[in-house]
Image 1 (spheres, rainbow, N blue to C red):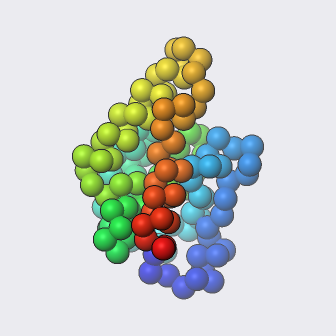
Image 2: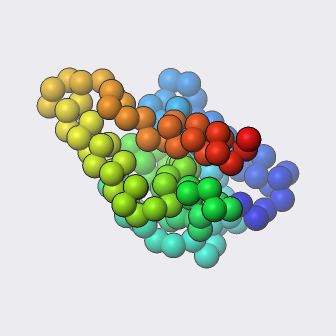
Amino acid sequence: MGAPLESLKSDLSNYSADNSLYTKYNQLNNHHKYTSGWKEAANSGGETALTSSEINNSGFELKFYPTKNGESNALGLVKANFFGHMVEAALEFLEAINKKYLGMPDDYLYDMYLFNALNFMESYCN
C-alpha cells in the first residue's frame, strides 16, 4: 500500500467475529493516507468506492468502500480484470436476491473476498 508498516498496523484491523464483514473485509481507518491516487469505482452499497492499481501483476487490486453493509471503511481484494470482477458482482447480486427473498444463506454460491484472498496468497505469496 506504499505506507510504513507501523502506520498500517495501527490503521488496518479485522471486523469483530460477530460482524457480517468479518470474513470478507478488513477495516481501514485513515484511508486517505493509503488511497490517494486510487481510481473511483462503483459501490453497490453506497458511496463511491476506490480501487488501487493491480498488485504486482497478481490479477487482484484492493477496493476500499467508505460504507458497506452499514459499516465504514471496508477494504477487500477484488479481481483487477473488469470482466472477472463483473462475474463476481453478478454472483454476489444473485446471492443477495436469493438471501432476501428465499432465505438462502449468505455466500452459498461464491464467497468472493475469501476466494480472492486465497487465490492471491496461492499465486502471489508462494
